[in-house]
Image (tube, rainbow, N blue to C red; front, side, top):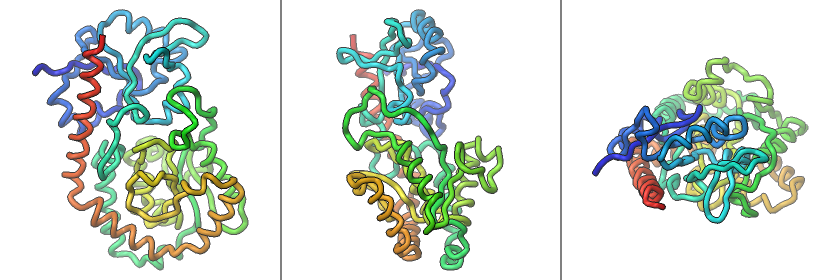
Length: 356
């Protein structure tokens, strides 16, 4: 069987499974990268903003010269839920459009909201994109074994903290968004929680990152290199915070990144918001069931829960789960997750190629 030829378009090509070595080990069996888009069967785009607004004319000109199917393979649901105002669905088809113009280009969207590609059995997608994450977790498991947990907890500066980019994006737009609470951006919710934690008088809290406080002990290099940043974040959290903000940017089925795992590896209790169907084994404070409460009640109960939480017991249980469940034979598990994902990707790509 001949391989599917693909071309990568846009400035965000590095945020795509076709750019990750762990994925290419298996993808290369079915796909062949080409440098000339005229030789491609499919063109992959990873970020809607690479074909939006001021970039749309160049994209429109590009697509007129090729016969390949254009696929927006979106691995970050926040991009679909917040930053995809130029993407529209019309009569069952998806189009990239120019603002205030009738000009449109048909594309095909494959993401969390409309495919099963990013579903997982044990290890979520994000943690399979690089082996750095689990190598770092192994390092911290060894570190914890030689650590007095009580002493570390007492020395931590903050009851609640986190490192995240504070965003001020508009509310969800119309692309793949309905009234379902399980398909929502959490930007404003996260910002409100962080601001109220910082302003409360009962707990010592602060938050760091873009539009938050200045990073403590993190250099410009670690801020902008995600893999270096990961190890630096773990070390900072290990030394500084008892409860770690582990809320995702969006609440979307199967979308779980490194955040809750980072909390556990850095001896912090995760504060997160995941529906019950996300089978993540760790314990912490899950805000999902509290979303039906009014915000003031939610926050006051959260503060109370933090103050009464049996931190050391849960830390020990979570570390055991990380070591014995997630890290046990993780290399084979990651390969199996990738293999399952490649099968689902192939099914979707072949469906698109066979469409009229």
